[in-house]
Image (cartoon, rainbow, N blue to C red):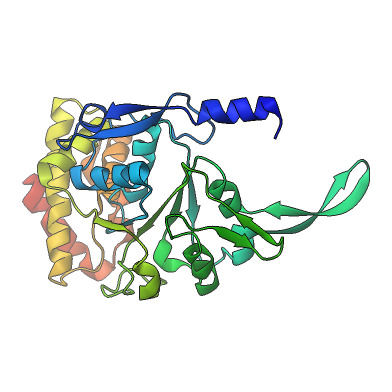
Length: 318
């Protein structure tokens, strides 16, 4: 590394301590590091984002104390966006990797590739996302962690130890972690596989690996007032639209209760309600926006139940 690169890297690693309560609007107050300069891969700030207390504290503990944080929650509850928005306010670069069944060990570690240098074709090792992130001040987020392939999971297990090193057997190298490298995971299940019947493709996670996650936080459905607040801010709702959003959330809560009682097979997530509200703003019709956002995805035999939920929430027939 030359002198200029060293100075650049040093500047990017410069931090100040800021108050968690002031920056995130939460009750728990402690100092957390914030990078002075915003580097590449920093997520954009969503000024209307509302932070959940427990989830935010878990993420901040992971960032400040180099803890491995696992976020579990139902779909559409904002697990990944929560990590991104915390990182955004701390100027902390954040990169997400979706662990679908096509992501392999080679994708994470890297592989030999043919490249052109000085008009000659040579074989050169192209490092994957894991070695790159491991050596930089990056919060690496593995989404859909419970859908990862076994060979991929064992690669990740190497870096779950806080001071763990990354051994690249193909390169005969042992890498030391960057002091500000952090690792997170999000999943719909907590490593026990799909027990609800709605998350097909998820796997049971080796409990030896689950034991290496220092902090496990759950982010599920919020209380009604908080959810209405989040959605209202998301679409910049006026007073009339806020009343409609309250009814939308009430219907969503009815679907969640109905799902728990096994009356229906598809539940409305907070993400679904946000999309419903956004589509309503486009066409100014509650029923049509509900149909195009949610009902058209549902089982025909259950439509009457959803229409009943609509009537109970809005006080009018569908």
